[in-house]
Image (cartoon, rainbow, N blue to C red; front, side, top):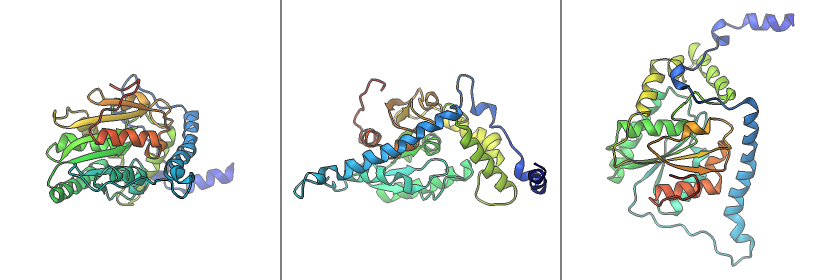
Length: 287
């Protein structure tokens, strides 16, 4: 016990300071999932299995079994995919592949790990959208997972001239602070590292200050009528309060995956493809 205390005392206080997310990020009526809720995320193993089966299943029937044909790129809006907190573009590869098979041109966000200040991340993504829109000569559809969806929502408000539609996956837009304690600990770690001078990370302002307020307020503003909006959510989400993912301005689509599994579950991927393609997704919880 004494040895442990000595180790803790030897660490600069700036590295052990804790914080609470701003009150406006956790409005009344929303709650963070309980500690045990994260166990539901183990379903991602099954969801990865379903993805693998969906890709190789048709070939198991024999050498002559047909493979999924890749559709040539069509005259469709380009799609930029934005990863979730701590994640990078590689996590969205299955979604990108499925969209390309339907003829969409997909583009990475160029985020290696989504840990930047939200204001800085939004500014970089805005530049990325400008480049893609200029190259393709038309507006862009955004698909964002978790935090990536929150960034997409803000960009759609800021630049409707660049964004034709957004699809969010497990993005707690109504209460970004309604997340599992594991995420809180990760945010704390980033803030501590930022305080000691590690560049390019979220700072306290990004989770409890003016930066957080600006990003949240922007993501709550109305969208222009010509920007489509689909919000995908799951009651089995073990990371965020699923109720916070249902933006009243969006077409809500319920799926049955884990939070992490939304980027690999074949049923979710089909829902995204349908939403991006402009086809309505119909299930008992869509609206």
